[in-house]
Image 1 (tube, one colour):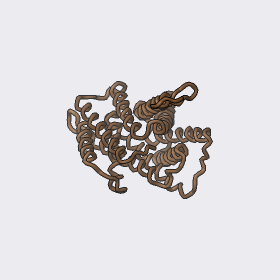
Image 2 (spheres, one colour; image 1 turned 120 degrees about the vertical axis):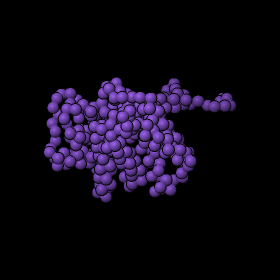
Image 3 (spheres, one colour; image 1 turned 90 degrees about the vertical axis):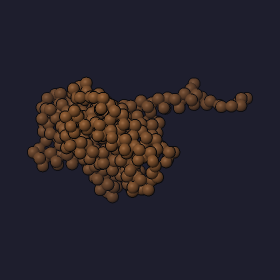
Image 4 (cartoon, helix red, strand yellow; image 1 turned 60 degrees about the vertical axis):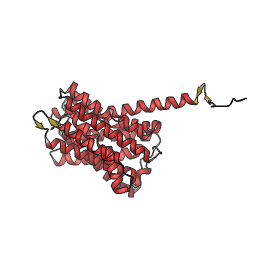
Length: 315
């Protein structure tokens, strides 16, 4: 006879509590892998820039190789890559937004420290919330205003060096990626392609982004060949780790722990990029940088938690 109180259901010797714990553990692990691998973009892309491989060529290799890998993964999962013709213009626009984000972030590395650039880029959840309030009538709050002010102070602290403001071009480039990536996320959520399988959707975004950079490269002098074995390895790892793995583990994290917790754990992205910049590329890291990064991370966490209060449904 079952006793009164909580009943634990067992599956192959494991209770329901064990299953929930394992799901949460895997979700946290996936989220940390996703944000950390995305934060490794400078580790693989800056050596390519230093080897005189142009930005369009680097991104053509990155998105093109990633598209092939993602397509193979999608087909291995039994997903058909066929889409409706009316979805193609939307996918082209998404590919253009993703491409613009990738280009702006990569170009910013030539002007400001890669860790600073990635930390500023992490402001995109704040812009997503602002877009949802402005165009889709989501409820705003005082916390959103507080987060916006904190983020602006954080960007100012990160951008200010001992000799004055860091290169304005680099800051403007990475702020542009904040907008383009936020618009990309909102478009994925609100456009007709939201019902597509995530692997298929990502495949077409990467494919069209790669095609854009292929055309861009040919229009500006052609594709730069990868000069060394190290460059080939960097381009391959940039596609595999910082594009394919980061996207796949992001989806798996959301399925296990929800979008809110996954987004908070996304703070590993700027932290990883900052550590790569400091320890691998000898970029400066002052107390002002620490305070600025903490303000940005805290502002993003506030926005994410406020988003959770507006919706109890996780993706």
